[in-house]
Each structure stands twice: as structure tokens, then as C-alpha cells.
Amino acid sequence: KFPNLVKPYNFISSQPLKASGTKKQKVAMEDVQIIEVTEENLERCQPLCDALMRFQAEKSKLHREILAAMNFENRLKASFLSSQNKLLLLAEYRGEAIGYAYANTYFMTEEGRYFLPDWLAAIYKKGQLVFYPEHQTFPANIGVFNNLYVLPNHHGKGLGLTLAKRLMDWLYQSETDDLYVYISNGNEESMAP
Image 1 (spheres, one colour):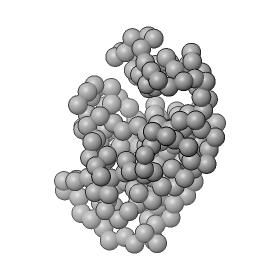
Image 2 (image 1 turned 180 degrees about the horizontal axis):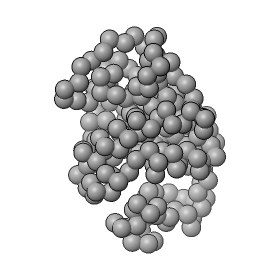
Image 3 (image 1 turned 180 degrees about the vertical axis):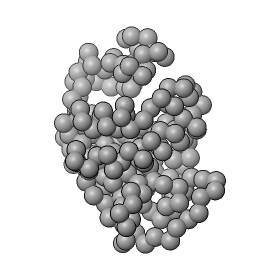
Image 4 (image 1 turned 120 degrees about the vertical axis):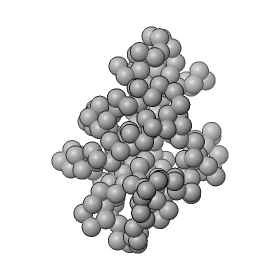
């Protein structure tokens, strides 16, 4: 369905990111619950999303100040509440939120491809392509794998891969023409084979 994605899930790293000062906690995957987030429990994702935004800002090689201004309110919550078709998964262990993954789909027109959110207007000029390559044809139904984050002390257990596979399965079943996976600059480790 997506000709440019050679091997499903190949972009997911099987190697956990190194986190200094974190102690691994023994958790069996069968003890982890993965739930679909709704508007009613969306706030449960806030600490995780804010941690991801801080991680992205710290790792960033470009425009660190913009990534540093991102948080749950202006990124995940805003996108979730404005998206018609979305899937937000939250992983919990004994009631503690330990990871999340988010994807959405939307219909994009030729005119819409040039849209710049406020947080990017300071970097890019109006009319400049930012999110879509020139070869992308519109109108199109677009699927986007937006966020994946697991607390560092829960890395190496397959939780990130489990969340990613659930999102990818959902995206593959959605009526989309093309799929985008957003990876922040500076986070090349997440693309390692």
C-alpha cells in the first residue's frame, strides 16, 4: 500500500536509547496495559509528552529554541483535539503511565500543503514546503506517525516496538494514500537497524 516503505516497522530501533542515571525496572510485558486514549483521559499523557518534547529539544541540532517551546498543550493536545481520525495509545504499568504513541490521518489539498503552524512561521517563509516532498501529489489522504515515547527506565523491553506496531497496523488499515513518520532531528538512534 505504501510503496516507499520497503519493510514495515523497519524504522523502529530495537536498541534502547541510552539514558544517563536511569535505573531499569523489571517489568514483564504481560503486566503492561495498553489503552486507547480519549478526550476524558488525554491528560494522562501530559508528563510523557512533555518529557518527549524536552528530549527532542536536548537532542536537536537545528532550531532547539522552537523545540524547547513545544509541550503537551501546544503539540499533542492541540493535534488530538483537532483531529477527526486518530489513535493515541497509552502504556501503563500498575497505574503509572510509562509510554505512549500517537498517529492521525487527514485529507490534504494542494493549497493545504503549504500551511505553516505558528511555531514554524519564524523559520520558514510562507509558501515554502516543509512537511511534504515536492513529488507528493494532492489531494491525498495522509497518515502520520507523530509520536512515540517510552520512559527511559522501561527501554529494552519491546514496549516501543509494541506501541509502534499497533499504530502501524491502524495506519495500514486506514484509508490513506501516503504515510509519514516524523522523527526529530538529532534522534537518529531511533532509525538504527
